[in-house]
Image 1 (cartoon, rainbow, N blue to C red):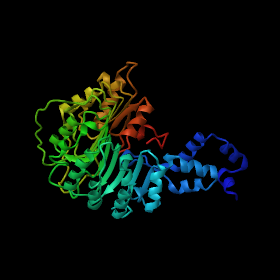
Image 2 (cartoon, rainbow, N blue to C red; image 1 turned 60 degrees about the vertical axis):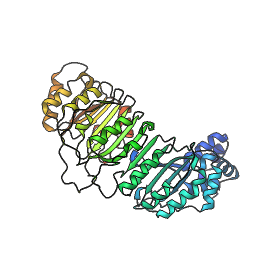
Image 3 (cartoon, one colour; image 1 turned 180 degrees about the vertical axis):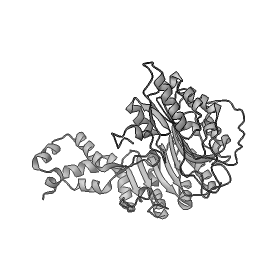
Image 4 (cartoon, helix red, strand yellow; image 1 turned 180 degrees about the horizontal axis):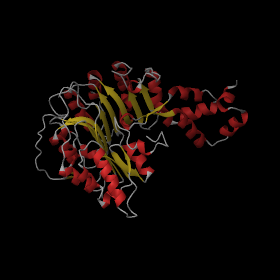
Length: 438
């Protein structure tokens, strides 16, 4: 069958597409080669499918010329098998001449680099080769998404760039020692325009006796970042130092373990204010609710606080149980004044505390709520809400330990899109009619 016919299903379809203006046709073709590898924010990755690009260029002369002459078709450079998914086709490392052609055709556009290896699929030397081959365009790097072992970390640390380097986003998954991660932290902080950092296994391997980035947190310009996601192990000292420094952050996600060197007796400490923060997600295996009580976010839109299912490491023994905290309950009441979504799992509410929380008028105005209050407290809340005849009281739903409601699916989707969890699917039980909601 003629290639045009096979791609378009008929002469009339082909004629209709080929009559489109260049800018519209380019938009369609670009959407055809671009795809999202993973919707989960911790692993989010958008690629350009090079094989599809080659197919498009072979359709006709016009498509060839449009694709070849459009810089945005040449801005993605990928090797390896993202996150070790055996069902995905492995991406072969391109030859140097093809990388040079891609850089030339990308013009002055930012380029996006995705390098996966180590426990995934490509070899470390492939990532080192790619970084070296793409280094002539280093000032145009817009995002780099990479897995790092000691060798590739060393190569990354040796990169040279100018004060005008445009890198705005680093997504890292490191299989390195804590000391190497400390050096990487300092190196990441030297990129002058960095706005977003996502870092899995920032704790360092193996588990160390020091908190993550111990005595190095101050070496990083957290105040410049707007979007931060970290997998860490901290005491209250590091936790508060991080939040004090992240004054420009709008989104913060922490996959965190409370480090055992921290004292269980928490000192009095002034409240830390972050007026720009809009979304906070903390997932902790031991519960850091007592830490969160020291925070205040007057403009917060959504929070998601939950207890981890999988520990960051098993060398520290049994995880401590969450400790009831008056400061944390005060934090929830403060947060309720502006929040549009609130997810809380794992905090040890008593029935009286839970009913008191749901008696707060600000809480009743939040469109999206899911709180794990325990079986007894959940029953008490449902009865309390039923006994209140006010027309402004929302209809509460219950599933086992969980109580909540959803009056705004847009806020609910934003919560799940921006604050995804490693282990939980927030609010899914509220929307059984829409299985792909989360």
